[in-house]
Image 1 (cartoon, rainbow, N blue to C red):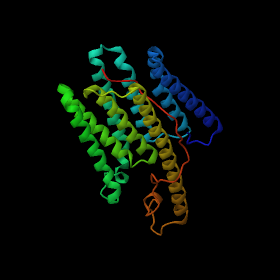
Image 2: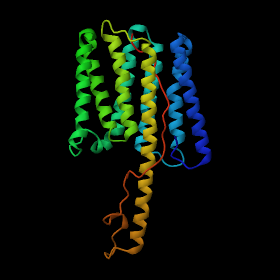
Image 3: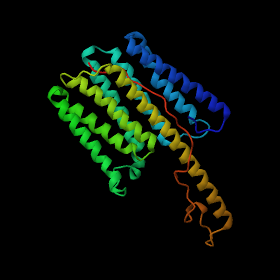
Image 4: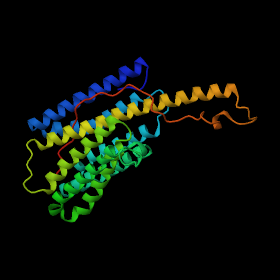
Length: 288
């Protein structure tokens, strides 16, 4: 997972990714074995390692808006993973929801420039736009299932659910990996909500499945962001080369800057960048 051609950067990123994968494995095994202390401590390391891998993979050139905001979202996700352990049990769930709500808002802001390529855009084919209805239907079903047990938390549940759904829909405009990550994030948080608010919900190894889907979601988003950043960077390079050629040729209009001539501006582009990969993932059992 690297957008850089530097061998040193690739090696550093590979080490960070392998460390992240090993920490994921330890965390999952700890969940299944009931090693609560190991599970908690390893959870604290997950998002920092993933953020370091993203920072390393996108080093060597100025980081764009998408990468910077993704790093911020990972930071708030880390606070959602750790802060609940520092507050009384009766406040832990609200603290978790609060920090992850901020993380989802940051993801929404990060993905917003890609909305015209997402399932929310009227310009997309009807078959593709139908996915937005699937997300909406999933949100309605989840809220209906959780509402009887949510009590005074119903409004926060609605706000978080709507924000999460919007994030997942916008993620479809960034790329396939990010879109898949957004969908898996919906699954992960739905498992948390079902355990917290639905009487009789009893998924075997609940914490394990919450963590698998959570880390998979974050990893897919990060891998997709690296790929999108590389594509944007390649597109900018192409635009600069075209601009330079047209500038050398001249436009026939004296005094007109090359950057303003038709067809010569730099764009975000979507030229290919080969990055990404798939590693499993996880998040701690978050129900109170």
